[in-house]
Amino acid sequence: MASTEAYITGLGQSEVGVRLTRAPLLLTVDAIKEALADAGLTVDQIDGVATYPGKMPSFLGFSPIGSDEVIEAMGIKSKWHLGGGEMPAQLSAIASAAMAVKAGLARHVICFRTVYEAAALSRPEEFPPLRRETVDGSSQWTAPFFSISAGTWVAQYAMRHMKHYGMTREQLAQVALNAHRNAAINPKARAIVKEPLTMDKYMSARLISTPFCLYDCDRFTDCSTVVIVSAGDALDEVKTTPVRIAAMSCSVDRYSWDQVEWYAAYETGEDLWKRTDYKAKDVDTIQFYDGFAFLPITWIEGLGFARRGEGHHFIDGGTRIARDGELPMNTHGGQLGAGRMHGFGFAHEAVTQLRGEGGARQIGGDPRVAVATSGGGPMAAALLLAKD
Image 1 (cartoon, helix red, strand yellow):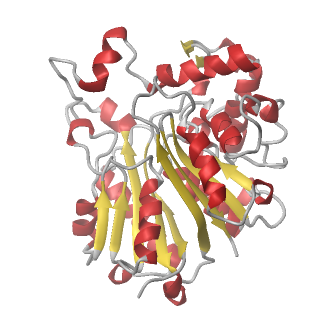
Image 2: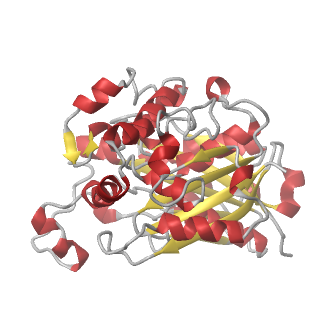
């Protein structure tokens, strides 16, 4: 029988660190066990698994664990599962799980993202990097020009905002400064942020790809993050405060990072509001993908919190996006402050805030609506979450 609604009912996260020695599958199992305990569910009640982008043997640090390994390791009797990169950004895995429980294909789905990039780089004998003798596909237009990082691709669009709309580096810096402030009081981020970030330190940091400096780029991290998505007619089986997935939207505008005029955040953001009665003014906190500091600005504009080309004015000075501000952003520290969890950390934090379980970083009042996003460039995904 199909359910009309989908809810996030369980949260789990492994140790977060840099160059961890615990195997990535064990980190994943740690996070799953924590999510099960949080939801009050047992493995026998799980009948679905979803991940993004699935195991990538050619790039194990980026994605070392697939849904099949989780099913085998945990002894899950799966009725539905998926794991692949042909989805529009990371949170699409959660959106797909929501569609599965709404369709009656599963009742409780484990959604996970495990990254092991820092450890893999430190142990190349165990996680050999991909080496190729030739360059083909889309990389033939970037690799010969040493444009092998998304940082160089995103930097083009940040420069456009500077040239066309007047964004300054001091305004861009507010994304990183806010992230580091919040990460400093997040126990999970202690291995990532060890000292405060000041404007002087930010401005004097080495440039990576103009206008991005070192602190505008997220840091390779080792961890696993899990959320459990449950059907609305299965909520009597869970013990936590459920958070409804009130709306979701995903989009891809080509896969050529340097060919799209506006990043997919704009189309995704506009589409999200067509799928709900909630409005931007109803949102209490935003958890926006910040693989690079410019990306949250595209989400602020794409979701209508500011007009196109004016997002830098919204964050100017940092007060509006601070924990005690008008629209608290990335309250756990985001990927710039709490480590590169590759998208799933934002859904985890949004639910944590709506439950009122943020501890020292908990925002004030009674937050009831949040937006979590993932992706940047030509692919994007967004979730509107509500504590009804």
